[in-house]
Length: 528
Image (cartoon, rainbow, N blue to C red; front, side):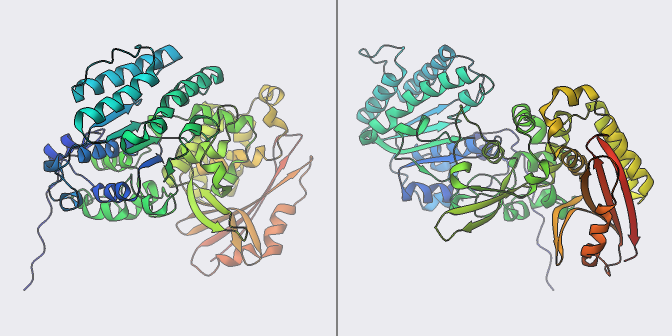
C-alpha cells in the first residue's frame, strides 16, 4: 500500500532580499538560477539584460559575484555545485546604482566614486597615486588593471541598474542627458579594458541605443529577448509548483496564474517574484508589484500622445523599438515594454527576415491597475472612478441594462467641460472608447478587445459566470443612429457564444461628439 509523500516544510519568504548568502544561510526559499548563470558565462564574455524593476536582477548579479569569488558552500545542492571550477577565485568589481537618487552630475560622480572606493577596499587595493579622484573613468580603469595584476586573474565587472540615474531624471531631459554622458564616459572603460576582463554583466530596466550610451560598448551581447534566458529572472510555473509547493494550499492555483504569470521575453513565461512572495505572505490577490511605483511619467506620456487604450491589449512593434529608446525621443511602446507593463505575446518572422512582435498585458494585475491609473489622465475625476466602477460592476453582475447605461452616462458626465477646453485629448476620436475600455478593464473582469468571430471582430466582449456582454461602439455627430446594435445583429457576433449555457447580451453604444456622452444605448438579450 503506497503512502502519500510527506509535505515539504515551509521556509522563510525572501521578500526584498537581494543577497544570495542571506537567502541560502538563513533558510529562505531559493529558485536555482545558477545553472543558467553558468550557461551564460560559458557562452560568452560581455552581456546586457533588461528586466522590469523588482524582478530579481540584483539577486542574479549577486549570484554571479558569489560564483566568481568561489563561495562553493552557498551552492551546495544547486546546479553550479558540480559544474563550476571552484579552484579559481576571480576579482569581482560590483557597481550598483540601485539605492537612492542622483539628481545632478555631481551627485552621480560622488555615487560612482563611493562604489569604486568600496570595491578597492574589498579587494585590498590602495588608491591610485596618478589618477585624480574626480576622474571616475580613470579610476575605474586603474581599479580593473590593479585588480588583475594583484590577483593574477582577469576581472569580473558587474553593473546593477546601470540606467537608474537616467531614468530617475526623465522628467528633466537636460539632467537626464547629463547623466547619460557621465555614464557613457564610465562604461567606455569596459571596452578599453577588455584585456583585463573575464566577464562583464550589466542589468537595467531600459536599453539606451548604441548611438548614445552604448556607443562604447558595441561588444555587449543583449540577451533581453533571447528565448534561452527568458526565465533568467523571475519564477516559472514549475518553480511555483515545486519550490513554493508548501505555500499553495488555500490559494486558487488558476487565479495565481491569471493574476501574476505571463511576463515573457521570447521563451518561458515567468511571474514577478515580488508579487508571488507577497501573495504567499498575505494570502490575498492584490496588485503588489504595481503599487510599489505608480508610472506617473508613463501615464502622462500616453495621454499627451493620445493613445487609444484598447490598442494596449494587442500592440505590434519591431525589435529596434522594443530594445532601445532615447532621452530626446521616448516611445511609449518601448517604455511600456521595458518597464513591464506590456510583454511579448507573439513573435513572427517576416519574409524580409525582420521580426514582428505582438505585445499585450502580462496578467490581470497589470491590466487592471494600469487602466485604473489611466482614467484620470483621460479626464475622469479620481473621486468618480471608484464610485462608477462599483456601480458598473454591480450592473453587469445583475445583467441590468438600465443600470449599465446609467453608470456609463455618469462616467462621461463626470468629465468637466473645462477639461475638454484645455486638453488635446478632447479632439481625439478614440477618447470615448478609451475611457469606456479602461473603465471596464479596471473592473478586473474577463475582457476581450477586438474579439474575433467568423464574421468579423466584436469591439469588446465581457464574460461573467452565466452571461456574456458583446459591446459595439459608434461615434455619431449628435443624434443616435442605431447602427451599433444593428452591426452586432448583421454580423452574427452572438453565434460564437450561443449554445454554451450563458445569456448573451448584445449592447450597441453610440457616443455623441457634441454631447460628449452616450446618446444611444440599445440592448438585445439572447438566451444561451
